[in-house]
Length: 51
Length: 481
Image (cartoon, rainbow over all chains, first blue to last red; front, side):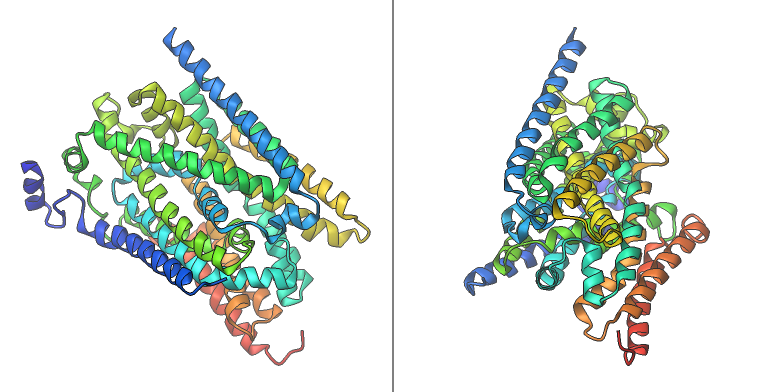
């Protein structure tokens, strides 16, 4: 576990989970936001009785 | 002896899978009573089934074997490509599907080419799009056969060409009988099996490396670039950015994908499909690209350096070397599901397009029954043709797939978006956009594609298609169609 902090110190873009922040912010965050949006659209359509 | 037992187990799985598909084909056949049933499932396919069928068609063995194998060299940055698939799925179902399914029903269109032809009132547009689809869908279909052949040959231990022919036989069994009903029903089952397989391998790979953070640490120790985003302008940067766009947004104008979200029965079902398709489009590629990247340190522990291997052989070798038999069998089942779910969609769409948009207009007195029979025969010929090409692979899986997706997206993005969102769009604009998008993508591919420039042909191709479709429609707006 300590090794990861050494790596973070060596490569400043590395996040605490050992993956580049660019990968997280440029890929993982948009992906999960897309899923959240899909969930919101689905719940709203259920509430509105969309048919 | 153990190898013999393993091979026997794999063969049992394959035979069981073929039998299950034959049952699905038979069930689908009972439901096919009209041409509309075969082509678009009679517009009666529900949201949950379509949601799963969508990502089962979207992702195939091409991703599980080809792209994941290449990801072992690209590292965790490959997951960026996968995560944008979820964003693209939201756009497909929330923005395009409501308008497209309504337009398909109103026009009574059965194929993508027929939709363009009827929407713009131009037979020429129908012919041109049908020819582009029929020719350029082939490299993608071939790549799916290569993926399945590679997996079967390495895991089961049979010759590569036998693996490819087994894939062809499986496809022929049920597409030949039930059309979109069989295809969608089978894709629903396949989508669930392949997702379980991919997620199991993903979790198992992290467990082999000692957990989530420890795994990344091990990867970084081998090569720090495995966990960092590639530097701007490098070949890997170009591949990651290019494939994120091509495989994400390029999907929106793929005829086989459009046919999936255009044939849902109601607005509520579109919303249901949206949630399921987005969830699958996030989970499946994230898992596949991750285990692809993780295969490098795992294979290194077996003394295998992935950088010396052909991309398409890395995942089958990874499965063979590192997995316990139960997981290999599950993965093999997942591969078969993933490959066949995509191939059947491509064969179904291309055979339908050839018959309905090229043969039928040329021969005026063709009955529905003859048309249906002809489509099935073309499906069979197409499967066999692609099998034969796949036996002598013309390129890496991801290269063949990206090529097809770029050509189709560049040709159809403009005409499709204008048909749905611009009332002033006309046949001149659509035809000009299609030809200009197609030509610019081809020219870029041959003269300016990576490594000459870091830009994939997708970007100029799609931009040209959209801009030309709009400008020509606007300029020729006064002409009567």
